[in-house]
Length: 388
Image (tube, rainbow, N blue to C red; front, side):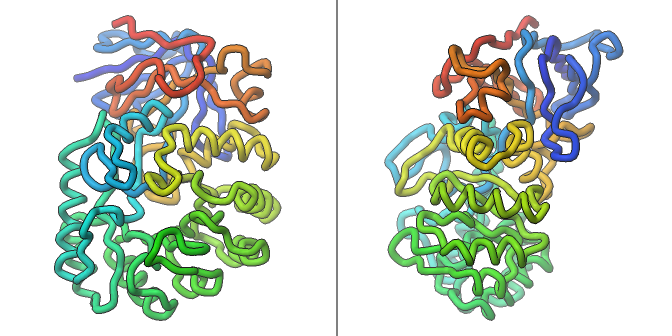
């Protein structure tokens, strides 16, 4: 039995919008799963195999990037860059979800080929986790000619997500809706490209098509890169009662703030989730999720502890994951962070709400320490320390 004890925690962010901060200074995980948390004096900390002294820093569920475009391993031909996933781990991200392996050179677009690549991508990231990061990959881009049996075959093989609807040959709402329904029937979640073209071969997806398609996630509602007009973004927020409003780093920041303001007015902040949409033309953004949390808190009039939920708990619930929440039985995936040195504000949360990034001191995945002091964030005031 592997027993992780994290003690001397200054604050526990839960990932839950209804109760974003938990009481407690200690958390225990057994065999990579959260067991309990609270006051250290009330918990059984004996027989630990790993002890982390948090030294007063904040513990939060590991961040989730809801929108990435991986290819193979920890390499992206889009930017000719190695170790981009490891670099993102240093930004507090412990889980990534593919919106399609669309940057694979020679990506097959015939039905047999796209299914084969999808299943292979799901397998290779299941078998190889770069620096321990969980990459949910194998997201096929739908093409004309696919039938219901294709989605059943993909689901039976372990595929759980569709690539962005609209990046393939299917660009009309009626056809897309049929395929999204088939995918949903077999437990496959869907995301739709929203906004103007991102790369040659993609096209405009407006609010009408998003609504007609009925996908589970409104991918980069703030554009990837070009956003829809304001009235269409507001229409999507008003019309869509269950779909996730995915805001990405690669999109339009003004449209991102508009989305959050509208969602708050409608009482729909629980539908806001975050992604980067990288690697793409804007490059790789190792701190993209942290930057979006700080930006939306600062300009979207959102308390920092709620903005953190956009980057973990909301995504967990919208994506039906066992990460991103402080919940018994959930994966012991955490980021430990603190106020950056010399950053304004009396606390880490006060600093973030002013638009400043926190410093990451450690990441833990499945109860195993995966990185310590981040090489990418500003240095934190305090650092957690493994003492056993």
